[in-house]
Image (cartoon, each protein chain N blue to C red):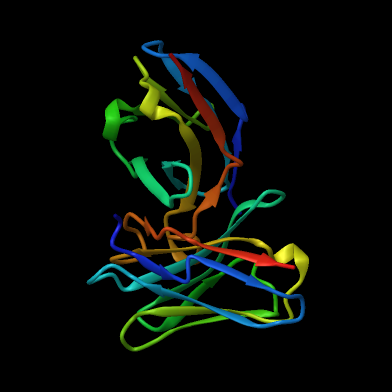
Length: 112
Length: 116
């Protein structure tokens, strides 16, 4: 158990819908990262937050957005969902920006 | 930007045999290097990391890796594998400063299967 929690574990939804994935980092960790794992793209960095502020953006679609709240938990919002958005979404956290990242168990999103 | 190539998508090996999982990276700046392991239906767990210093890095579960700057490689090795090492292994790289710090670029993964 890494100490990073993600909810829900599984999510099945239809195309065009909007979902919210939640991540609680390890106690004391200020950085949160979101990654997408799919069969065709592999593991891809989406976005990073540090103490509530966005620090880096990767291959994140405009239909996706994220935020980190004052209590340091983070949410990833995916809207206008397409079949290709089906993937495992991982959250990771670290103390700072150059420390070891601890990964959560992931949320498996299936878009039908 | 950084990129990672894992040269083997699948590596089958018999129990107690040695194994090497190959990783090459590309970057125009200094990098940190990592190996992660993913067991079925689980998240990623850090095996080892190279930040600086000795090029031979020892990690958990008896794994080690060697950073070779001239060959831009970071191969993972274990002298004797167990059935429980069966998993997917990911090599990753990040920059060491600025906006590249912290964001991991992953290879496509190598599925290690250990047979009895």
